[in-house]
Image 1 (cartoon, one colour):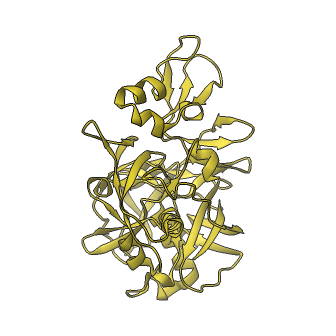
Image 2 (cartoon, one colour):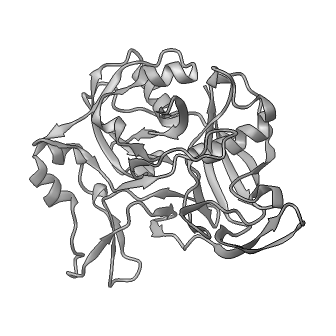
Length: 359
């Protein structure tokens, strides 16, 4: 495996919206989906040879890209992060004091009593920060809002080469200067430039969506500390489609798609008192466009990035460290109408506070 930690700097306004209307895209993504940034990176690196025909090892798999603020990387807040509605800057995680696995052993009542917080020590009401990005310094703090700007585009008549009456589009664009971090992973022996330009989002032919990618470091993987455990706690660094929750997560599918050797086994979501141990918000999101097609894929229902899952080995992996590393950097391929989509179900193991450990 080759894994890289990268930064993306936005050079021109970038239009990547969550909500589409008849007159444009609104509500810019706080995080750029992995399939979006992965497609842009692979097109920039491989041009017409992307996508590879039947050999995903000849491309890079990208994680979701999260904002960077004052050179600090942000991560999606898990469901046990709270902010006081009254006390300024009072943000805390109940997972810093309680073990999720230990609470689960006591049943759902223990989970609720130990991990679900409704008020702070001063009896002020709390709100959950999940899945808002948080940055880490000496303590966790809430991030500033993403820097965005309104953008108006005039439709052109191709026959008269002038503006077309009635074709006025409004967008919410990510401002130049904003930075994001993400990972790239590949099983092929692919050399990567330390710096290269990409184009992301709408309007790239008009100069919009230009970005500069820089390789910050080569990622060395992570220490998997739950080798012998039958249950594993996982933190989602990407959205997780519901199809991966309703049946076992078969890591052989990951190995087959990305050409990974030594990756096997399957995981299933732990069930306690007839409830799946999945903690996080459910959302519907776009799965992007098929390469070279003007038709968008169907929207899919996922649990948000930052969600926490408790799994157990249904079929134990022969090499748990390698399998968990593959799940972290490659995720699981999502097949929509025979079209594989990458960048989903990227999960990182943790023992205590996941955002501290994933760094």
